[in-house]
Image (cartoon, rainbow, N blue to C red; front, side):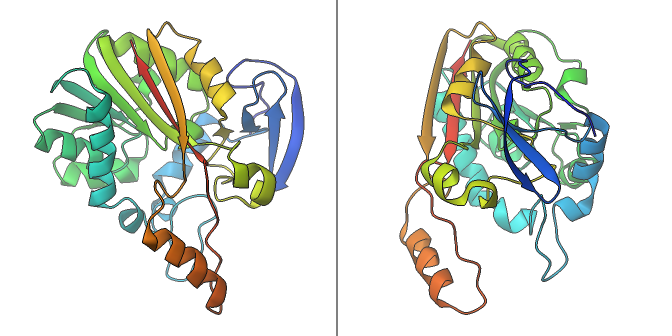
Length: 279
């Protein structure tokens, strides 16, 4: 474990928010980032993400910080939707694509199927092993350690990754260096300032995952992060954690409240952030 200053603005000016399963969360008074302090070291984080138990739980066991079942949650449909978003904001029809924190490489595979020259980056040894078996090219080191050429990629994505990073500013600076002029970075991450997360669920929110979600952003802290590098344009928007309000979402909200022995599905309004940056 290590004691830290704010990972976004560097201030030692924190306000304690919660303790959850031994993890201490604070809010930076300067930029509003919510972060775990103290937290696991970079090497301890790699060990956490390289354990198969982070991705797949034993039957009937609830995850403390990872997934109940990665493959049932990160479905092919969701991976297609992720790359749809990348193409929506890209200003080139096809080109070189990098998915940071790519897991088992599903988004990379979808990009390749659409004619992109695509690779992934992932520190989890277990996830890289699964992706490699499927023929996906994945760099198995931290992005900060990866030997990547400057001004190389037309599009870079970070889906549900920013909240896991111990050094988000260093990552954003590296992304800016390896993006081509006019290239796009697409980020999705939890919004801890979302209405229900902030005022109702607080530390019991699904967004607060000790040891894994070590940096929880707000729109102001996201803006502060992006301002640390010279992007030409930045857009920040919020959307529901369920991604969109569907019949299935409302059915789940009702069903889990009337069926016995079911954990109620949490309400959401604007608990996700999408950050889009062009170089």
